[in-house]
Amino acid sequence: MIAIHDKPGSFSDRWIEYCRSNGIAHRIVNCFSTDIMTQLRGCSALMWEWENLAQADVLAGERVTRSAEAMGLRVFPDSATCWHYDDKVAQKYLLEAVGAEMVPSYAFYSLESALEWVERTEFPKVFKLARGSGSLNVFLLKSRDEARKICRQAFGPGFKAIAGLAGDFSTRMRKHRRKGDLIPLLKRLPKTLATVVRYNRTIAREKGYAYFQDFIPNNTTDTRVTIIGDRAFAFTRGVRPNDFRASGSGDISYDMSKIDPRCVQIAFETVRRLKTQSLAFDFVKMPSGQPLIVEISYCYLADAVHACPGHWDGRLNWHEGPMWPQDAILIDLLNDLKSRANTAAS
Image 1: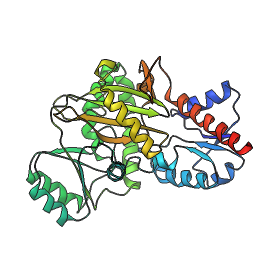
Image 2: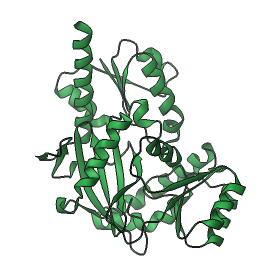
Image 3: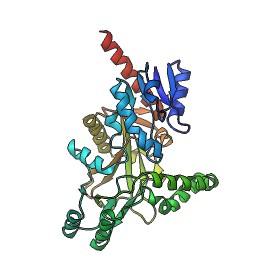
């Protein structure tokens, strides 16, 4: 019995349909309910795609995940996959711990240590908040004065968790105009803004730390590699006009000749070390051409992955044809449950 948290518009739509179409026993549960642990009795697994811009998801996600695991359930995402989600500082330590090839990153927990580093480092540098996706809360600092100012804010009043959304509006407009769905975006705007206000009232301000990364110049694109089990899907994203950020630009290319196989290999190697079920990796390249990981996330857009013309396996063999990531995740979980049942039976 697979428990699925039904969240319309999320991965659960295809998970539920897949189970219904293939006769797989499943139970719809509510992970926000106070009796969720009771609802999970008799289940073998829990599936819930919780995300960073839903306040209840952020508050309950990891708590329910770890508790379900303590019950003996297989969970997607499991703790190894999600504990560092939407926390770029945690990702720094994790990737360094396993020796992953990452953009040099720096974290400080006092104003004094941050300012001391500012005085002896070189600029430009990229400043990031732990929270934020699609390049929200990411700033290019071109001088020590800019760095000093942002450090004082970080250790003073801090930052709203998603304050960057308004500044990102022009990118959203351009992306939706290209897709031809600008009117629906504008209709959703009041609800989106209300959600942002409610989220920022609930989630604490980002403060008490400063996080920087080296700025890697001359990247007109980045490479997104999404690993799901033994599959790697990849595409490139163009940098926004008059900007340095590619994440969230919507300018996606599925020209596989542009994919550096080293990005795919590094992503596979890192997932094996981390023992994660699925992760999306963002890569940029050094002037030497060496790919480096910028950040990781277990959440990603299903449509963007499905649009890939095929995928590589862990031996870098190419498999032609699209695949829905939700299906791949569920298939892997079912295979894992079957393997565990066979092991228990023997």
